[in-house]
Structures are given as structure tokens and as C-alpha cells.
Image (cartoon, rainbow, N blue to C red; front, side, top):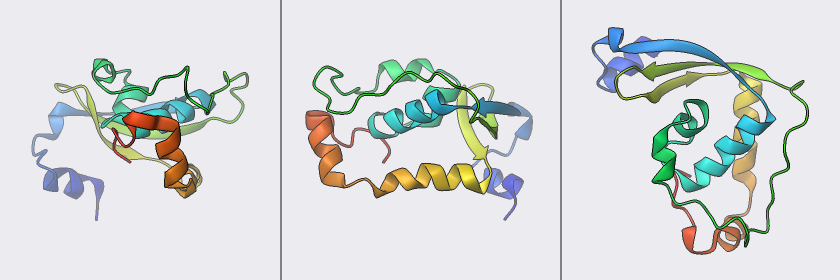
Length: 129
């Protein structure tokens, strides 16, 4: 299945309304994707495009959270991803990344769900995961 076929199946027949952009993703962006995957319905859009829709999402109370994200000090471990985004909606439609990046992101799905619910308290599963 090609990317163009998939986009047409999703209802994007006018491909001139889409643009492909390459973004460089580092540790801080990975942490943001993970945070927004638990609290947002649009984690890639919120992280990469810094969408204003992130203001509408329920973010967990940072003071009560048992998990703290440390600031990123090194950008040496970055990877490139290709993003197809809608010009009019300012949303990410499709992302292309290498297998190592995908495996890294999927490795976070091995976290025990009970631990996630405990950390997020009332905001559990407000996002897309």
C-alpha cells in the first residue's frame, strides 16, 4: 500500500492541500510525544507543529506526578522524520520514520497500564493511547 493510496483512502483527494516537511526529532520532542500521547488526541500535531489545540487537552497535574521529565542537554541522538501535513487544518496527516524510531516509540507501550493510571490520576487515558 503506497502513501498516496492511503491518503486517498483517508479522504484526501486534493493532494495540493498537503505538504511534506522533514523534521529533526530529538530527546525533548520524544518526551513531548509521549506526554501528549497520554493526554492529547493529536500528539504529533501538538509536538511537531506546536498546535494551539494542545491548550484544550487535559494535562496531568505536574506537581502531583510521580514521573518527572528532565531537560534535554544533548541533541546528538536525533533522527529525521518526514511529515505530511494539511495546510488548511494545520494537522499532521501522515508520518514516515525509520524502523529504529518506530521501535523506540512502541517500546513505551510496554509500560504497565496500572502505573499509568496511578500517575495520571483523574486524567487517565484522556489521550489517544
